[in-house]
Image (spheres, rainbow, N blue to C red):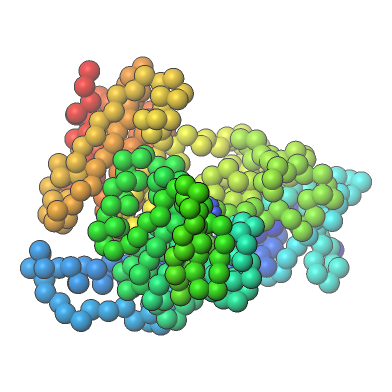
Length: 459
Ligand code: NAI
């Protein structure tokens, strides 16, 4: 039995970042991670998918280089090499997180910890598999999430057979499936559809809603879908999956059933917080449909118990998790801090990328805001024109007329992932339009489109 100031359950972006910040602030910190440091993001999410998508981008660039005067024949994906590179990058980054923990003085235990109760002195107890225990004044629950497995007949059986895959298994496929069927056209669904389409699969996306990409601006969602239809991906929208057979996926639309044949199926219909089996009930932490409930200081229903990252189900993005972990630690160490969810950027790393932050025209109007909306083709950017022959990218800027500040930016175009933080900063700092006009943007960059859009706001 050892005593700590803080015990963290989960070494993903929420947990490891919070651990580092806590140790820097002088808290004696113990971090439990049962799989690998870095969590889903580093091991089977954000990072490995980016290595895949970069390989796809190189291949697509070579294959479709003709308009740019680049002719290259016989280009193909070497899937085992793509997976090997992914493993190399992940290994290096996971090692890097381990070093940061050591440098900061965080103690890391590579096993699962389970909350076992609260002592009379108000310390929380965490138990390990062999029964040994540790205590701490503060707890941070950062156990993340796992792929949701809805009760669709056949889904679980076909998952156990290896026919249905989640984001985890699909990243280790050594062969590119001839026919890949994707259930759920959200972020994971679209990114994997993008990769496997480039790698040579015949991809079909089955999506329950009438648009892909989740709750993004509907015009951008449509442009995204059209770009992928042009590349050969098929979409079944407004389609509810009713059964998974051993050779394909059956869906229903307008009372009619149809079947999409598949060699592999990806299930990407959202994520479920990992809140069961970690002993939350022993200390009475309130949950709602699996989410650990938190306030904007990341406090749970119990004193000195915080929750950050996917487990609280609030935004389920790695960058939200980083910030939530910091907010939790700041509040533990007497530095009042609040989480703000109004300007969290979201990116879909397809080709073209989608990047968005803040209010859409629709969400702003639902909140009763008087908004001006500017919609510009990306072709206003010289750099975009130079690099995107026939590109159909757009930007949408949503401006609050009352404050004369930007409240939303939505883009479909490459590099938008790298420039959305600037839009985020303008929204977070509430920079007025006149202030943005005084910023010197480098030329030629795609980022200049933001300046251009600001000049197009009508009085
Ligand atoms: P998601 O919530 O983005 O999309 C799930 C989609 O599945 C939705 O469009 C939904 O309408 C659809 N769906 C649900 N049930 C269905 C059914 N029975 N049949 C057909 N469609 C159905 O979830 P996804 O893609 O699994 O991603 C999970 C999380 O991972 C997201 O919260 C996302 O934030 C995060 N993520 C973020 C990435 C990024 O930032 N680039 C990349 C990958 C994941």
